[in-house]
Each structure stands twice: as structure tokens, then as C-alpha cells.
Length: 106
Image (cartoon, rainbow, N blue to C red; front, side):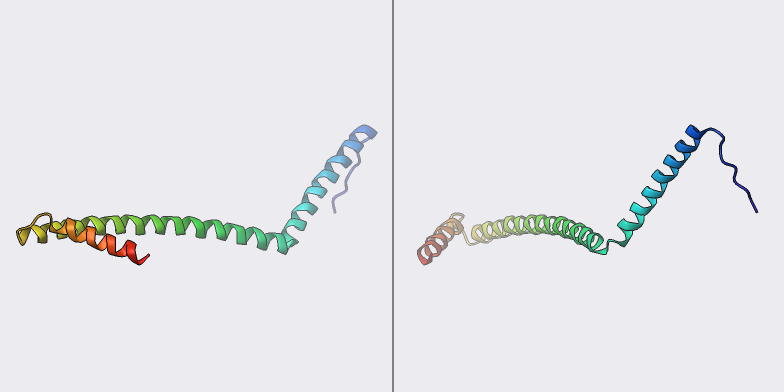
């Protein structure tokens, strides 16, 4: 069995007691934080929401990029087909007509 000897100096004893209280207080706070399930669950939900928003933004950027690529490819195909039938401005006239029809429907 180990015996603990107390320091002879009262000021040193008070300093050790203060240090022990501080360490004990930190330990109690750590246990209390682990036991606070409501706060831990709320923090986890917030973290998850941030991750979902970030992934959604990345997916939206990909969709926009793919839509732009598809639109450019479609326009190129339309020009190619229009040129093949001998009228390079036909696709522009058709486009204007479809726009005027869609704006009339609105």
C-alpha cells in the first residue's frame, strides 16, 4: 500500500488542492458533455445537413454542366442536319417559331 505524504507548506497544499479541483471539474464537464444526448444528436443532425447541402450543390453543378453540354451538342446536330438539307438558316427560323409559340402559350 502506498502512503501519500502531505506537503508541509500550507500554500503548496492549497495549490495542489486547487489544481486537483480544476482537473476534477474538467473531468466532470467532459462526462456531462458525453451524457448530453440531446445536444450530441442536434450536432450530428447539423453536420449531416451540411454534408447533404454540399453534395446537393455538387450534383446540381454536374447536372447544369451536362445540360449545357447536351444543348451545345443538340444545336450542333441541328446545324448539321439543316446544312445537309441545303438551308443553313432553317434551324434559326424553326427556333424562332417555336419560341414565339411557347411565349404565346404562356
